[in-house]
Image (cartoon, rainbow, N blue to C red; front, side, top):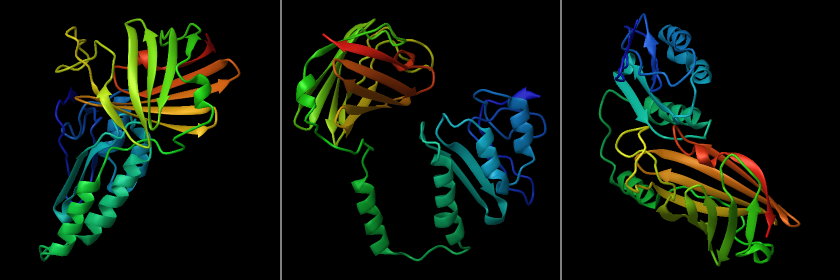
Length: 283
């Protein structure tokens, strides 16, 4: 048994195997998969080496989904290899949608001969490509309650994030989340019905080498959007869009002079300071 450090799809004659990026230790087919993220790697790999593509749903249940759908599919009868390295962290249905689209759009429409030119379809494809934009939160862009807390400071109870206080500032279709943590004062600008692009204000995260802290002031690029889900409940979505990817959802729920803040991050090896739930009181 050995550990393989590169992703290789292995196909026996007449069989179609699925190779997830998380991969692992492999006895029977040592070039089947990459490193397994966590869990019972020996069990998972033994399962994967024996499975045909029809078992992809079961494999999907076995493999952790934090990396957001990174896998390969080999179809020998079609002379086709499909590899995808997407990042859909936090979206559990990503693999099912990708595999469904792969079969319905590509496999079911594949032929031995090349397709004829279709300029009309090509132009339509270009329009779709040019219209794509990064996802942002959808919902109400305003709440009458916003003016009651606009710019006011809330003092936080002790909490896992180390955030000591925060305030929210609103102006038309934009806003700011200001807070103080162990590194000092921070600000994240966000948009309503749109993303605001900027820098995620947490120092020390990896740059060129994963899991190696930086000390040169390096910051990740991010995009932030918000929406009012209820009159006194604000959702803030922050997406890390840099060398590494992550999602952070922040929920602010207000009642009287108190706020409950919930932070849930989907990230590998960083943003540990942005996970938890606590209560804050209006100053």
